[in-house]
Amino acid sequence: MACVTHVRSEAFSSIVVDEKLMSAAGFSKNEKVQVLNMMSGSRVEVPILPGPKGAGEISLNGVMSHHGRKGDRIVIIGYCLLRDDQKKSHRPKKIVLNEKNRIVA
Image (tube, rainbow, N blue to C red; front, top):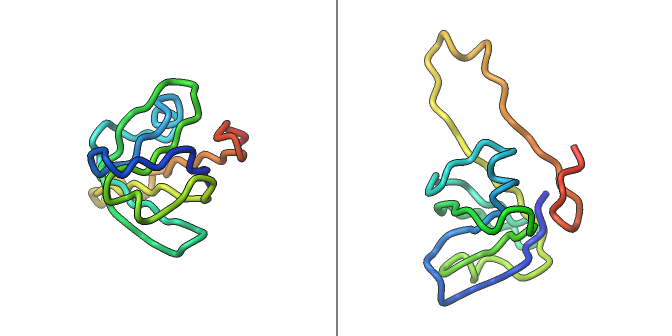
């Protein structure tokens, strides 16, 4: 789970994620992701945008700012469509973060 580091109500509705974490998880800029807040139970779809590389930033912006607070633990999920011939070989990516949003597994 990731830890929310910023909440910005005045920004474009999105989630900003440290570029290093985005790359490790295989997310692309403006990809639609689902954000699950483990503290409030909310589940929202928004575009993901890259934040400063290595900063550990996870920012809930715009409408997302009403679905979490700084310190909340969240899960970010991306989906893909696969052809039948791709299903057996597909392996989803999963990264595990500590409370400072550093990759631990």
